[in-house]
Amino acid sequence: MAKHILFVDDDAKDFPTGVRRQHIESRFGLGSLIAGPHAPIENAVSQLQSKDSVVAVLTDSCNRPDFSHVGQFRRLGPHLRIGVLSGVLTEQDRTRALELGADACFEKGESYDEFLEEAGDAGGIAERRFYADLSCLLDKPEMLGRWVAYCSTGRLGDSDDDLSLLEQCEQTHDPRELFLGRVLPDSGALEVAESWFPSASLRSDAL
Image (cartoon, rainbow, N blue to C red; front, side, top):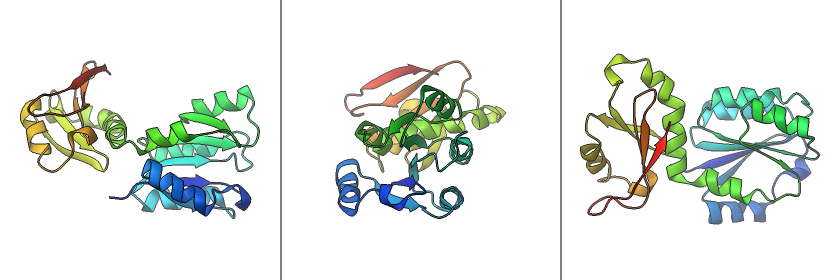
């Protein structure tokens, strides 16, 4: 499935140019969607509700100094990578946006390539989907202790055994694009980092 970043702004001249969008797609694997300049927040909400391909949002303040729309976007997409891209950002602005769910803040003119790289990483998307779903998984008694496998589009399956689950998932997915986590409130999660069979490379991360 294609991956998209949604640009949200109330000023048309601040949207990335066609050349910049082509660069973003070729380098980071992200297509570009536009919300604005008229009713940009409402437009963005509509797209987030209808397009499963959106994995990241980069939004202007859109004349909302309280950045309440950042919290709205976060509630709609717990797995999204969300950045604020605004003309001028005070420390108070940055703190407020981060508290409401932004992952990063940039002033217009600053490079946000690192944000795009993280947003387009399939393994990172899979990891964010796992953590976004974890609270719901923990509410299901039958899932406690089980291993679950995720790709960038969502959950692939679950098993009591992580090795058999990986072997099953590698038949259809690149192991570098997978994330395996165990449904426990205070345990580790294993990310498939490089390759699986015959030599596995796994990194242990604390929840």
